[in-house]
Amino acid sequence: MKAKKTPRWLSAARERDSSAGQDKPDWLSRALARAGALPLAQAEAAIADGRVKMNGRVVTKPFAPLPERARVQLDGKTIDVTPRTRVLMFHKPAGIVCAGHDQEKQGTVFEALQRLLSAELASYSWHGVGRLDRDTTGLYLFTNDERFVAFATSPATHLPKRYLAQVAATATDAQLEPLRRGITLDDGPARPAKALLRERGLVELTLTEGRNHQVKRMLAHVKLPVKNLHREAVGELTLDIDIAQWRELAAAEINEKLGFVPRGG
Ligand code: URA
Image (cartoon, helix red, strand yellow):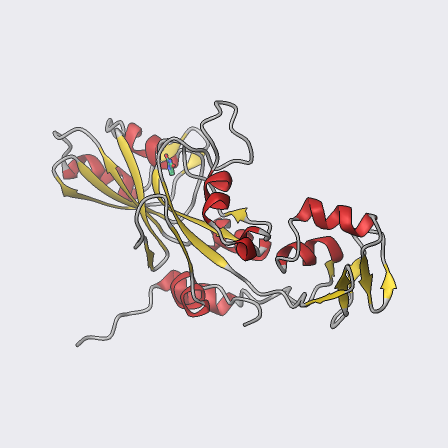
């Protein structure tokens, strides 16, 4: 069997060393939240209330820097603040938003996730990685590590995002050609994308950047308004769970499929 070639973006991401910056001091409340001891707001309150000790002394400033190998206790219990990167895959249903609050009261991805998690995982402060529109379904990632958010959302990473868009049945392959060459949107040039007509009325579009409503705007540009949008892959990671379900990624998946070196073990 032919060995699978490593995609160019993945080799480049590995060479860039996504572990850079791991040794910068963290601050206490964020470290507690990332470690899953308490959600961020509660961690800040616990520190201000004098419930947290660092190397045996009470610290009341939530933003106190956390020295390397500091011993942290919450209510007398030692907390392992060795930061470990955790990433969750979620199959986003239509109707909910990727934001902290939904003005239309249909709900957010954070609320949907929180309802599904065990008590252990629910105590983490989860960050959403980028955004999908309310009506978009598919692969959405959460993490406790802000560095992973920065890595995955930076256009410099060229992390591919693969979408399936339902468009008019009359769509032709020739209509997609400008997207392969690169078009200019109202907020600037869009990188050339991989575009193919997978079947009648179904376009597969792979982008290496993630601007607002980018797929819809690119397809509208070639007169193919999107009727339905689904994200089926990010990097080499393919959605493999049912709608509204989640699963945790193994450290090897984070590394090998997303090109990010996870912290801790
Ligand atoms: N592009 C869009 O237009 N919408 C999404 O939700 C994601 C990418």
